[in-house]
Length: 459
Image: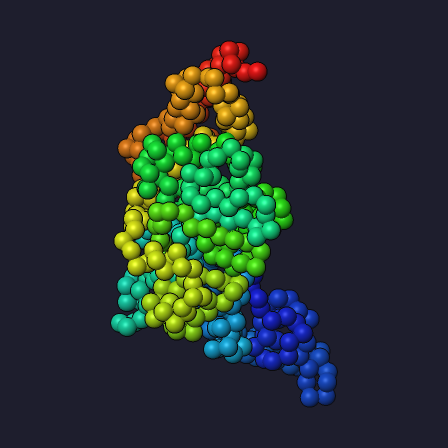
């Protein structure tokens, strides 16, 4: 569900800009003549006076709107409020209009032609901008002037990891593989990548670091310890704070912005990504959009990233240096070293397949897969190690090669995520049906092997 946040002044405000905006909100505004009579009731002046007020309203409102960029973003209000306030302090009487949607829904809206004329798209997912650039949804270079911002600009650095409550009694994992230990069974949560650009980034990072087969093997084994899959990336820190689970996989700033309650650990090796903002074709307030990007990249805009409720890593190295120990030491170390580089082009090439495979292999069969892993771990040491490895291999097998998955993604006509079968073309439908059948067969084989081992070795 999308969340609309226009943040326009209400009817109670009395300066001329907010009064005119209030008219756009159907507020009860009445104009009077010098005697205090309603102008619409003055004989002989009904049409002319109304016409004049319409013209005044139109031009004044046009001037006000021209100062207010329309922004489509996946970022939480805790972050965007800071920049709305910073803009308003710079341009008094003006406040950017924002619509919050998850990254994938936002991309899909822009792909439909940006019907609501957003000027800017603002998100953490670098592949989102890669996809939009490929589809010609961004403005041409030079649209903000020779020395102005580029069509896409980075503004902050991030990496993925996991968080827990500071008062949790559960041991904080130190490495990705620790999350696979039985002590974390039913304790871990993450969002669905088909609903969260942040989680897609996390899943894709695992595939890029470990490789296609080993990356999926890790995620499929991790599924054995998952408590739930949240609908949005925000749901992970929210669930931690509300004691729904103990460990949450997330992007750094979503946890660090709640540092008083949550403790965050970066995963190693660290693969940093750059959050970006892009100027969209079809926007109506180009100058205001360019000015907003300038503000974001300015020193005050970069310093605002250090606010506790934002807790992001500035892209500007001078601001990072000035921040000193206010930034996470692990991130500072990662920026000084040559870690693996995240590849947004590769991610974009296989976006549809990765989202679809995650749903087919994990989301749709989470309870069954989780139970099979529980039974696997419950078998005593007397069970043959080779037989246990065979079960694990069945539970971590992926039904399609990286090459084939990429080919299907590049020709996908349905966009970025798996849809109900009625929304797919014949090739996509056949692929999903095949993947589901192969996944079900692998789980049946694992079940049969476990039954056999349980009969022989279970107490």
